[in-house]
Amino acid sequence: MSDMTPHLRLEELVRHYAGAPAPAVDHVSLDLPKGALLALLGPSGCGKT
Image (tube, rainbow, N blue to C red):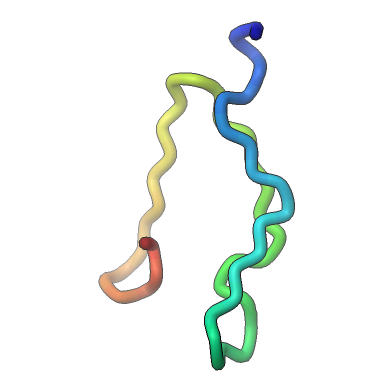
């Protein structure tokens, strides 16, 4: 496995909550290499968990 190979890959991630009119996450794709940092930011109660 080379250093350029993604350690975490998401492809076309979609997340729906029951009763919601639209998806909370809609077709998100990303590659995170080993050692990368990712921050999910938003106000309290917005669904970051």
